[in-house]
Amino acid sequence: MNFKLIKGNIYTFVKIISTVLITSAIGLESWNIYAVINNINVPSSLNPIFWIERFAMMSHFIESIIAAFYAPSRKKMPIKYATYTFFVGTIGLLELFDRQDDY
Image (tube, rainbow, N blue to C red):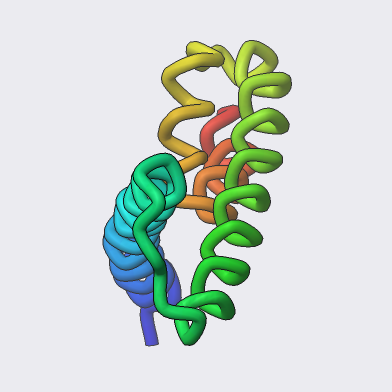
């Protein structure tokens, strides 16, 4: 069994799903802000979804701050890597701290 191939496939799958979900969360939150500004009623059944997406976006934001802080020590551009980590999440941090890149 080739674990590096499996790891690469899982990372790719998670990166794609994470990017789609975070982009959707940004759109959902934008719609919610638009609805509040224009006094449009949002269905209350969406409240749990709003809380989940806010938690996910805050988690990814904290991960991107960590990535921006540590990126220069790994010879990466902080803004670019923070943006990448915001969209892919923990996988971005795992790739940043992967020791195979150091050699």
